[in-house]
Image 1: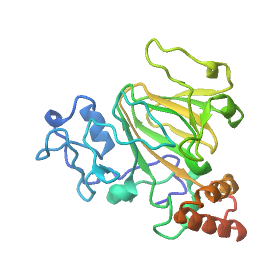
Image 2: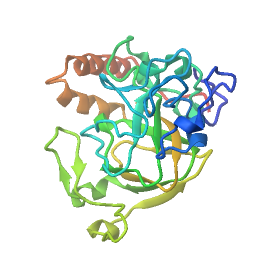
Image 3: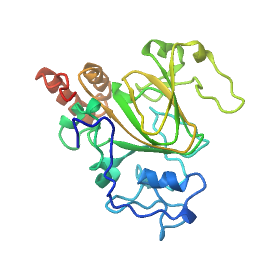
Image 4: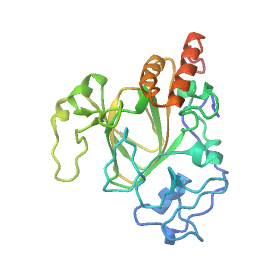
Length: 284
C-alpha cells in the first residue's frame, strides 16, 4: 500500500511472527537482528541452521533452493558481492512473504512507481519491496542497478557504509560487461583489513554511513558499493518514475532481445509515456 503522508516505510507491529529461539540462531546473525528482520529466522522444530518462515509466508528460499540461515545465497551478476560473509540480498517479499509485503507502506517520495501499473506477473512488478540482512563485514561490491532503475533503502537496524559515484565516473571504475548489458566493476571500493585504495579514491564521490531509521535514495545510473559496519536489516525497492522512464525503456530494449517479459514491460511503459501517465507525482 501507499500512504501519501508517509515519509518512511512502516510495517504493521501486530503482524503474527513466531519468536526466535536464540539457541538455534547461527553465530553469524544476532538474535535481536533476526527478530527485527521478521523473515529468515531459525525457529524451534526446524533443523539447526535452516530457515523457517513466519506464519503466512513461504519457506525462506533463494531461487529454487532453500536458503540456510548463516549461508550466502547465489549472487546476481548485476550486483556482485564479496564471498567472505553471508548476506541475504534483495529477498523479494511479494514473491516469498506476501503477508509481510502487504504490511509495508511505501514512502510518499517513491509512491509513483510505474512498474505497479503493469499487469500482474510482469517483469519486476512483484520483485519489491525486498529484504536485506547482512552480518558485520558483509559487502556488496561496486555495481549499478539493472535496467536504469531508481532505488531506495530504509535501514531498520545496524550501520551501512555507502560509497556512490556519479555517472561521469563510471568509465574510470573498470567496468566490465562480460555478464550482460549491466556493468560490473573491478574497483575494490571497500577493501578489507590491509587492503589498498585504488584510483577510484581520486574520483568525485559521495560517502555516507546510513543509520537506523534513515532512508537513502539512489538515482538510476549511480555506481555504488556498500559495507555492513554492523549486523544490519533493511527494506528496499527499485522503481520507475517520470525521471528515469526513458532510460528504462532504452535499457529494456536491449534486454528484450532475449527476454519476452522485458519486451512486454517495455511496451507497457511506452504506453504510459505516450498517454501522459508518467506525469509528476502530486502526493507531496
